[in-house]
Image (cartoon, rainbow, N blue to C red; front, side, top):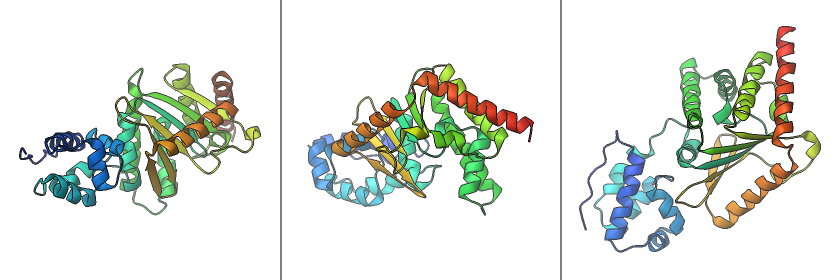
Length: 280
C-alpha cells in the first residue's frame, strides 16, 4: 500500500483527507460498504467522509489507521481537518451546507442564518451569549455573514425556505433591524435567488412543530437532514429517517402560503416595522 503523506493544513484539509481516505481504501481492497461495516457505519457515510461532507472524528481516525494499516496517518491529520470557525455542534453541518446543491429549510423562530443581516445576526448572538465579550460576538457574526456568501452564486445552491409566521412577528433587535432583515429576504425572493414561503399561524398543527429542519442534497452523495436545538445539533443520514424529514418539509410547504402571497406578507410586515420605526 502507498505510504500516505501528511496533509497541508492550509489547503482544504478535510477534502484532502477525504480524498486520501478513498485512495487508501481502494488500495486496501475495501468497498465503501465493507469499510463502513468495519466501522459500524453505512457505506454512504464513508462516501460522505471521502467527499469531505462529514468529518473524521479522532476515535474513527484511530480505527481507520488500524483497519487500513496507515501507521497513524488519520490520527495525525484528523485534527487539522476538523478545525472550524463555527461552534462544534454546527461545524459539520456548515461544511455540508457549503457543498450542497440544494438546501431546504423550515425556520420556526428566526430568519435562517444564510438570510440574516449583520444587525439581525448580531442581536441573535448577543441574546445567545449575554455575558460574552464583544470580540466573540464580532467573530460569530462575521462567520455567519461569511456563510451567506453561498448565495452570491446566481443559481446554486437552490435555497428554499419556509418561514413560520412567528419569524416575521418576533421583533429581534427592534423595528429598524426587522425592517432591514425582512426587506433583505424579500429582495432575494424578488431577484429569484431564493424561494420563500410563510406558514401562517392559521395553518395550525403540522409535522415540524417540534423544531427547525434543514435538508441538504448533493450531486454525488445521499441527502442529509440537520436538526438543531439550544446549543446542540444533529446530522441525520439514515435514508429512512431523511425521507421522513423530507415528507415533513413537503407537508409544511403544502400548508404554507404560495410564494407570491408570502412575499406580499413579508413586505407588508416590513412596512409595518418601518412605520413603527419612523413613529416610535
